[in-house]
Structure formats: structure tokens, C-alpha cells
Image 1 (cartoon, rainbow, N blue to C red):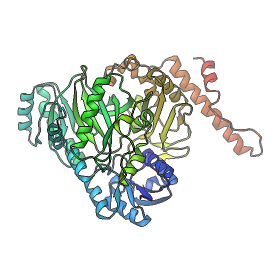
Image 2 (image 1 turned 90 degrees about the vertical axis):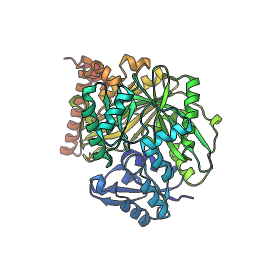
Image 3 (image 1 turned 180 degrees about the vertical axis):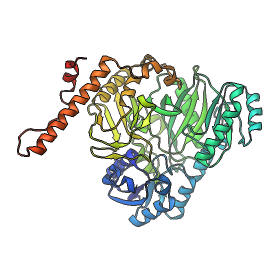
Image 4 (image 1 turned 90 degrees about the horizontal axis):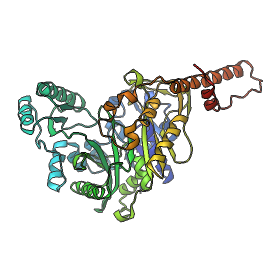
Length: 503
């Protein structure tokens, strides 16, 4: 049985994996770049190894250094988290060769589902519906043009080896075809080292719905229901919720069965996600499979009551799933919002810097997966996501109200964050009604721009006033060390200060 896990990642996901390890009585090992020496995952782990300079290409993507760190610390397993090497089949093979357990699916499953064209062919053979499009990689522009004219506009051009919105272009007009193909191929080459693309018919009013699946090494596979992921900016998810507000029980059962069939087609084991694109009539089509843990997995955990990381470890240990499909059900409603160190009112520019103050939201039904703390300097080298805020409630309306409360209580100074922007999303009528698709952000710009209303100004000024009060008290303590004055909670009068301010 696994006794020590090296987590080949950083930030909130590394801490999250280590928490489950600790509950299982398993030791954890952190790997870190030079700039991450003071990161929370390094502090939390039982052991830690520096694996190189700040750039991920010289540290977190160095398969050889991570394997060496596992050997050095006596780790018998590696959990890759998400991103970095989590869907790298060669890394999984290296682990296997060195006698180290890779907590994830087989290299075969990673390879098959990682290549989008191979995945499409596999799904067609398995009887899973796919979007009409090509089943062979396209390398030259002339062939791409011919295919597009045959399928008919609009179409989506996608990188064959890609994901995360990279190498993706929507083409609506003939005059944009050549530039879109060139742009997609160039971006795909830079991001994945492969400029092959494939082409799909574009679904208007698309909804992005994914199913969490879990399989063991004994052939048992279940799904843990759906997540609605249609609030996206530049093909990157911003908000996720479960259950999906558009789903019916009949369609849920059909999609869940197809998700299981998709996983079974590659003899899948471990945690994974089958992503579907869904139209307004609830016709659905296979989009892709992520052969790893998803960023948004906590909302599934909360609604279904299953710790997915523990399940990954149990599967890696060769244990069968402890439950069947009929044992699983959805209870209540959960929403996740991703908190980024960026300035939404300045074209979402990253905002690295030192955290001057942080107060994390607490209370019934609130979960916070983060890794920053007061005095921590957010580096500029990595993804700017600093935490995930998850809420659960009995109903969707109550979950939205709880998320508003949690965002209101979440205070960070020293950097810009996406918190105000996320609060605006919750105020959009389409979101409140649950009637939204992947065009949500572009169609609701008037709601999502900074309104500069008296309420927003008062919130901003109250935060400034509270922080100034805190600094004043801190300086007083430094100049008069014997004073009995206490710093207290510099946010405790936040609501009263807001109502008292006038402009």
C-alpha cells in the first residue's frame, strides 16, 4: 500500500492533495521551484525538494528531476494534480519504469484521449455522439479550406494535441478562414509542438457540461453526475455549478451512461472527466476527455459526498470501488468560483505581488481551497489562480446567496483580484435564472463592467478605510511597544463603515 506520495505540482491543488494524504495517514512530499520556496504546499508537506529555477520548463515540467526527488525522499507514488505533467503519458511510463506508482490512468488512456482526433474516432466506435467534423489531422491550409466548405460555416478549428482553449478559433465568415487556420496552427505549434488541427461544426448557443467519472482496475466504472461549466472567458472556465440548471433527469441518465461508455472504451481507471457540448434542445456531443483531476472537482465532492483524491489513491492501490452507480446521488447545490490575482477592470492583467492582508470566508457551507497567506509574494511565472471558493446549500438560490455572502467576506489587499468581477456575475439576470451558455460573458458586458455605483464605491472605500486603520494601529504598536492598544479585527466594522460613508 502507498505510504508516501510526492505531489508533482504547486499551489492550491498540491495542498488539497496533501490534505487527503494526511487524512489517510500517508506522508507527502512537495517539490518546488526556487521562487516557490515559501509557498504553502512546501510548508504543509512532510518533506520537500527544490527541483530548479522559477520557469516551469526548468522545474515543474522536468520529469527527470521529479523522479529523482521521489527516489531521494523514498516516495512510492506520485500524484500529478492538474496541469503540468498530469496528462503526460511519457511521465506515467517513466514512473512505471522506475517502480513508482503514478496516481492516474494508464499511459494508453492518456495517449488515446489526449489526441483529440484519436479520441473522436474512439468515441464514434463506442457509440458516443460526437460533433460532425473531421476524423483525421489536417496539416495544410488548402485541405482545411476544402473541409470547412464541405461542413459549412460556422465551424470550430481546434488543435489536435491541445486543450485549455489554445489553438482554437471560431470561423463564421469565409474571409476569416485563412487567418483563423493560420492562427490556430501557429498557436498549436507553440503550445504543444504540433500544428495539426481538426475541424468541427460549430454548435450555436453551446452549453459546456462535463461528467465526472471514476473507475478502478477491476473494470468497475461509475459517473458522479454533471457539472455546468458554461461561464467561460476565452475558453477558460470561471464559474462552475452542479447540478446543471438546464439538465433533466432523463438527459442526465443518458449522458451519464455515455460518459461511462466513453471511459470504458479506453479501459479507464482513476478519476477523469468527459466533456460534452450541449445545445438548447439538450442534444449533446462528446467534446473531449480530461484524464486527470479537474480544477472544479470540489463541487462534485460536496454534492455527491465522495473525496475524489482519496478514491484516486485507493484505485492506485489496486482497491475496487466501494460503491456502485445506484449508491450515488446528488444532494443540494454547489457553486465554485475561481479567484485570480488579476485586474478585471484592466483587461484582466495579472497582478503578482505581496499579500498585505487576507481574510478567508468562513461559515456554514463554505469551502476555501487556496495557498496564499499574509506576507506571501505571488510569483509572476505561473497561472494567476490563487484559490477556489466553493459553497453548498440545499437549493440553487440559497447557494447563490451564500456565495454572495462568502465573496463579501473574502478580503485580500496588496494585489488586485477577480473577487469584484465574480460578485457581478452573480448579479446578472441570466445567471440568476440559470439561462446561460458559453457566450454568457460576452453577452453580459454591461453587467460585468465596473459599475462605479455608490454601493461599489462604498465597498471600496470601506476596505481602504479598514486597511488604513489597521496600518495606523500597527505603526502605533511599533512606536509604542508597551501600549495596550490591540490591533483587533480591522474588518469588524466593515458593514457599519460602508453604511456611514457618504460621497
